[in-house]
Length: 240
Image 1: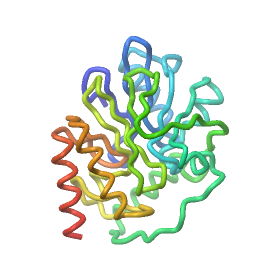
Image 2: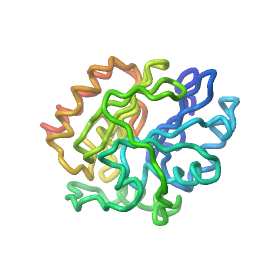
Image 3: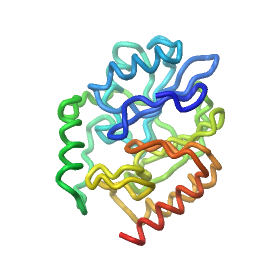
Image 4: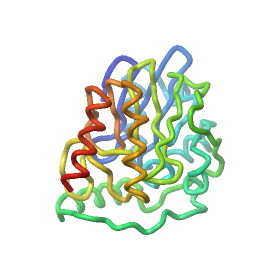
């Protein structure tokens, strides 16, 4: 899905990742599920690119529905995988996420999410054997000049990835625009969050980017002021 020049989404409102391009190649933000490989190839083709143009992956965090294609890209195509140092063990599969409350859910949307994950490789994730760690504030030498923004809360090493060349910020699960367990749409806190209070506090850094595209791992892209999206997340948290 083309969002803007040099900015594409891979996947759909259930599980999404993103591509940003410039004259040096393509950077992928998150890698969704393993079974979305054909979606990745199709989006690269739509950009006039190929898998050989990928210069790096940046993971917003280490959960399985964000790292699905990472090891295949690293192992078979030599694409380096970047993740915050606090989530490196989770991304490599050597540290399991803590058990958290699922909270509210509706049977239909939850079944759709779990069914999609199961049919797209979510039960047999290949964890990346090697990762390169990044830190808050770091600007990576990758296409799109991605800047790392620490947003701990969903996980200790959750980050947002600011892409100033295309006016976007990829937020992973720092927020959602489609709750995978209830089907509710619009900016809101994401489920399966380790520390919900810390996650809300971290949203200030996303608002400060001034990005016009707020791109979550689950839900429709938000096209508008990042500060407005953050305000809506906080209002949804209060309402809940």
